[in-house]
Length: 522
Image 1 (tube, rainbow, N blue to C red):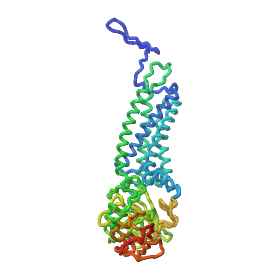
Image 2 (spheres, rainbow, N blue to C red; image 1 turned 45 degrees about the vertical axis):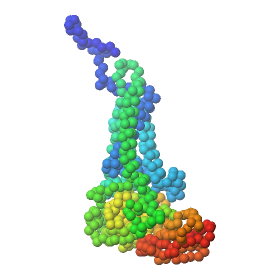
Image 3 (cartoon, one colour; image 1 turned 90 degrees about the vertical axis):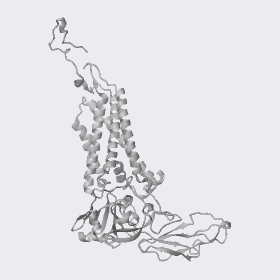
């Protein structure tokens, strides 16, 4: 680089102001740019991929922050919810079995989405770098925002529309949909700005001669940017740990069974099944309950409005559709709330109304027949065993539908939609059903399945006890057989919960085997 112009005034020399190609003094500001026509393709790809990876990490961190601080739903959970409805029950159960259960499947889904986002970020960064290389280094902000913000928002709105109404703080569905889109736009904008800034940080340089080939060295800057990405990833890991501790993995699939089964299940022991990675923690001040759809008079209720209705207390047992013969996905509680017909009657359902679709703030939905919704025993409950609903069981309000499997008892209720016969819910769309009515079911709690006893060590008859449940039909009689169904003896029902709840029974005199051998109690 040749500089010419100002000379030492003390030596009587003059300043030369004659224009020439050699007296143009280059500055850092004017030359801190990319000569992309001479940038090597390999270095452009590497720089773009690194910048895209860091941008993907930054975007994921923004999503985690929105979820943790404001309960905003992000693709980390929305994609899994959206895809699951397209998997029929057979393949779904097969996949779940191969990965070690529903909890492991949810963890795999979130982890795969995070890794996928970072990978897509790297690929997008490489494509961006090639585009910049072909277009003389122009940043083209409008183009990058269109490609990396507007296009993803449009794609997400189309692909994830049924799930966008999810909000873990309890916003109504329409407001939640808008908030989710705004959150997505913010995250995509963070990605775009980080990608552009990171890429230009890597490849900028001071060119000393415009005729000299420029292929920027990215080693030191790559180390700096990579280190920044690692720091951001560390922050993301901290957020992931917080969300993991708040996640459902510790209680999803909780069962209630064993030697001691209380007539009324304690709230903390009540069985729990959830589709969510993190369950909602609803802010009751944001929460609304809408009655809408095929009705003459739509209405919106706040929590205080529900408490203003004449309350009903009702003992009802809930059982999961996945409850096996020896499983404990069944529990009993006393629920307090409002009969659903008190909310539907003023709305006046239209003549073509046939079903009611129930929506939770987590965008879970399910349907029941309109006549079942109008039944006096179908409740919108806000208390459980004398206390406000626990968050994991649907605070501030959930549905109680006696006689139906647990998936119909929608938690975190936010909308009651009167609909036609074609209406389907989350699991119905997946292919479960069509019969969701609980069959009569019994379980032997004592002795344990496949127990071994030594006759010589028995101090007396063996204790035999268990439970029986008939949906909304009640239990009037329980019989036991100790010879695989050849003969039957009547058991004693020591707790009868009524038509909507389980009954607990035992063998009044216990049982003593006649001789050593294998026995089947039914």
